[in-house]
Structures are given as C-alpha cells and as structure tokens.
Image 1 (cartoon, rainbow, N blue to C red):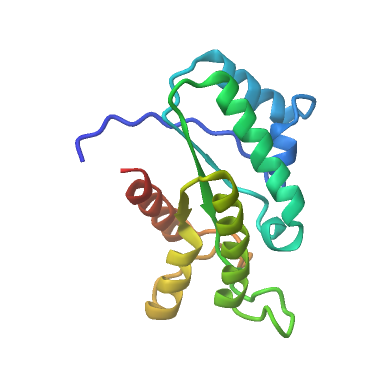
Image 2: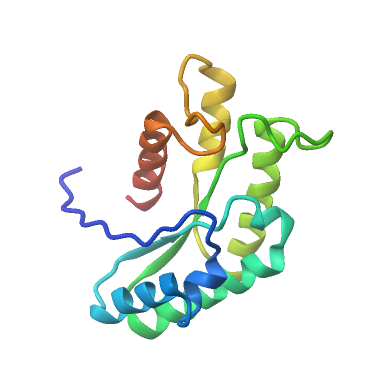
Length: 166
C-alpha cells in the first residue's frame, strides 16, 4: 500500500485489559510510559484475555474503558480498535462451546456489544479464523496448544488488522 508503518506493543500472556489499564500493574506502567512518551499513535489495538469477553463482560468493559481513558488523555488523534479473537481448536469442551465457531461467536458478541457502547471499530480476526478453519482445513492456524495462533494464524491476524485499519 506504500505506507510507512511503525508498530509498538505491550503483551503478556493471560493478562487482561483491566490490568493493562492499571497504572500500578507492571504492564500497565509500561502502557502508561509508552502513551505518555509521545502523542503520535494513530491506532491502539486492544485484545482482551481470550475468554473474558464472553465469561466476564463487565471486567472486559471496564478494561476497555480504562484503556480508552489513557489513550484520550495522552493522544491527539488516535483510534482505539478492538481485536476480536478466535475460538479454541477444541472449543471449551462443553456441550454448548465444543466448536471453534460456537466459541468465536460468543467472543465476538462480547466485542460487538462493547464496540457499540464505546463506538469503536473491530478487527474481526476471530471471524477470519472461523472462516479459514471451516473452508481451508489444510491451513493450520493454531499452535501446538490448540489455543494460540501458529505462524499462519499470526499472518492471517496481521492481514485482518491491515484491512481493518487501511
């Protein structure tokens, strides 16, 4: 696309957005430092711990609100985008969430509800995972733990983010 893109990130496995928004949390301090260091972020993409949007919506909403407040306080022209994730390869091994698509649909529902409340766009990575899994079984999107993304899954995620932002 001819775009010059710089990427920065703060990640920690199993961390949730409320912690990333908390200035007393180790990762939250890093988020604060990065946002306060400059006001030239165009986008901040936020991803909640995988099951929180469907299992604890109020914590998810509070985390999104906390990050939004940090971004609004430090950035002049920055759009926050929600990163809607995928269902696990084996679902959650329950009768109602035994498939990727069932789990992903509930995760997406939480992201869409929050996006509506805060008027935020969504990067539908989970929806893309479900589509590829259902229609292209030869592409392995999952790491060996059947929950996290493989290299192909990471590439798909990047493609969805690019199409969402640009």
